[in-house]
Image (tube, rainbow, N blue to C red):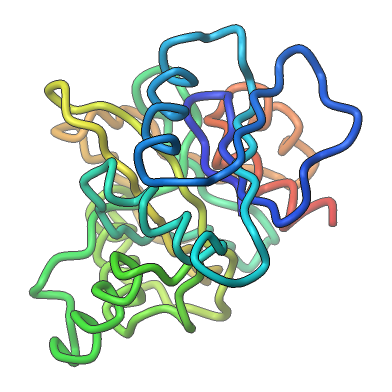
Length: 233
């Protein structure tokens, strides 16, 4: 699992990485304080491109404990989105804030088909589970809603689960950690596309798989990671 801070990454490992580069910051998790200080240093010193948090396989300082401490540094926001494919084999992208992107948005309480179950799964993350079990039911509901709102599509359906991505950003000086669940979807290309301009989206476009390399050079690191997994792995 990679957590992106712009084009930089945070990763957890049970073994100290070998062949460390000058751009790597490697920290052994020994306490909540040392992990929080390490992240603050990483955030401050942009010469470091990768933060490796080294933890034990089990015991007091294992991966779940390290991840729980790491999450506590942020406000956690769950989100969901879609990679939409049409009958011609083209994929739908939006252009927002100078980047190619995929339609996505926050998971709200109104999306929860089973509020108790979904709330428990989100609580599990905060309480130290480094990986969620299969996505909460609300993720699919939110993903379809966001795709419809941001692209103008009226009819879209989920065909399979994709991986989830993680990224960090700041909002009004508050640190945010967002996990986005992704789904592959299908939609008919005859539908009228309408970008949601209120969300800074001014272009929605069907794109040939042959042009994905152009998208990769003008998108966010977390989206690039998702696309590489879908198209090149």
